[in-house]
Image 1: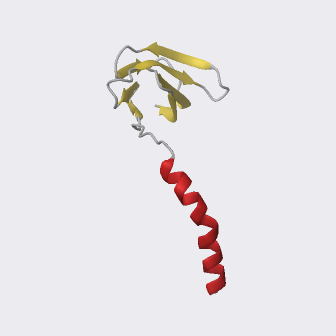
Image 2 (image 1 turned 90 degrees about the horizontal axis):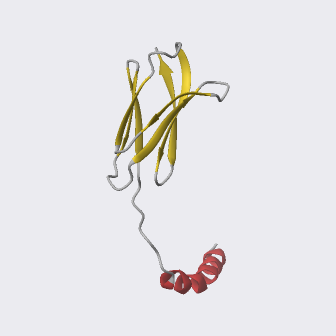
Image 3 (image 1 turned 90 degrees about the vertical axis):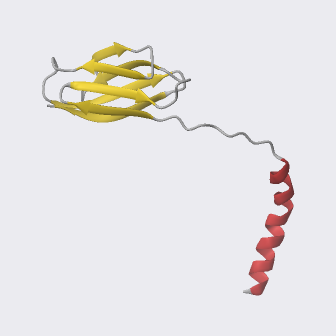
Length: 105
């Protein structure tokens, strides 16, 4: 067992110096929350430097059934015209997008 431990240490040791010299960056994790409140979809971004661009809702067949534009970190979309059922909400920001299944009552 001692031989195995020594061998692993010898294999990893040459790479340790390489990793310590590599440049690295810290990225802020941006989260987008999608919440349903009755027939109202509310999407928010926690990063004020990454506003939401649009919110889209898709049905089970993948067809876009609702869309709304946004210009800030919070966006609301009224879904009262949609039939009751399961949908997929997609909120798009400048840095990416987030999808979440939703239920319209």
